[in-house]
Amino acid sequence: MNKTFWNRFLDSSSHNRKSKIQNLKWAGLFAIVVALTVCGARAEAQQPAKVFRIGFLDNSSASGNAPLLEAFRQEMRKLGWIEGKNFTFEYRFAEGKFDRLPDLAADLVRLKVDLIMVSGGQPALAAKSATTTIPIVMANAGDPVAFGLVASLGRPGGNVTGLSSLVPELNSKRLEILYDAVPKLVRVGFLRPSGGGGPAGEATMKEITAGEATMKEIRPAALGLKIKLEEIDAQLDAKGLESAFQTAKRKQVGAIMTATGNPFFAERKRIVELAVKHRLPAIYPQKEFVDAGGLMSYGADYEDLYRRTAVYVDKILKGAKPADLPVQQATKFEFVINLKAAKQIGLTIPVDLLARANKVIK
Image (tube, rainbow, N blue to C red; front, side, top):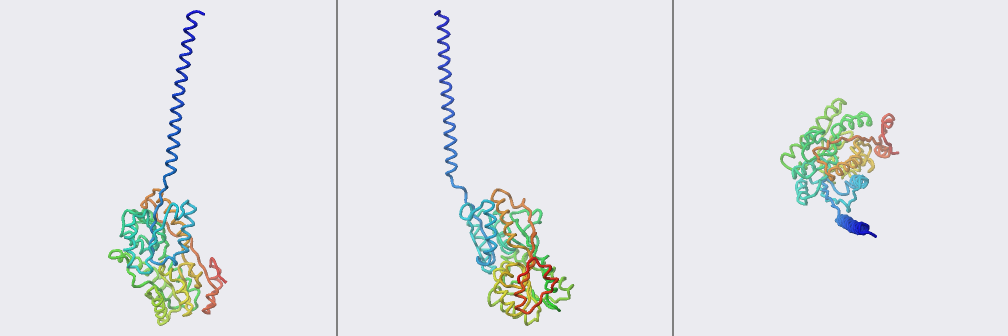
């Protein structure tokens, strides 16, 4: 073999060795990258996911609001949120004592909750007075613009958004239903909460303004039907409600309506029992009153409102801003009649009214 051959052979062997070394280097580098990626993924997987804290502020009691909160939890589960796993509730109930709301709201702010969910206008006012940074979601509020909670429904601004239950617009409809249900009806008692006030100061004035807006809307409706509307203040406890019904009888009202709100909702069983005891036809704002033995209800489906509240909470916990989420209004309404309750008080419901009901309990 000549010298040229050996040189070529040696050069080839050297080149192969260099290639193998280079390949080994690349393989080693690849292995390191893979190892780092796996370790990083494991470390990330080992880091616990954040558990969000949601404050819940309400006028009423835990038992009074239980069915609505369960509807909220069910919808949250559909969206991937499990109470006790990736979110927890901090419940604060005023038990009908409105003057406790500011302190309860301040307590939630001190806990640095990620979001405050409120039920009703008064808790919303208390929460808004306590914080301008923590997102506040209304599960229901009659007229959030009148309450001063949002600038407008379409562009709420600030840190408050959620659902409106359209309370003022529905009261006139309830009065019309009572008029159609009760023969020769000339006087109706309207029960509203007393002794509560609002959270404080400016909030109280806004609350009064919103309540007065409801009465301004219903008074013309009563006038058009030639019905005298008796406004009856009621302390929302056993003694106060009994006194309110005694006042209604003394004023010789032929039927009863109640204001909308969680304090009344929490006392629905007692209110229904008193209406039966005093043989007064009554229409209520929520179907749960009829479930408790009440005569009739017409209003927003509150369970639906609480389910839709979960959608707001989901979006905000994922980064959305309340100011960018328009306030939505109730879209589902129910008219329910309980013929058992009608029989208890000796009332015959007209056939045409029965035909208008979404549900008739026989």
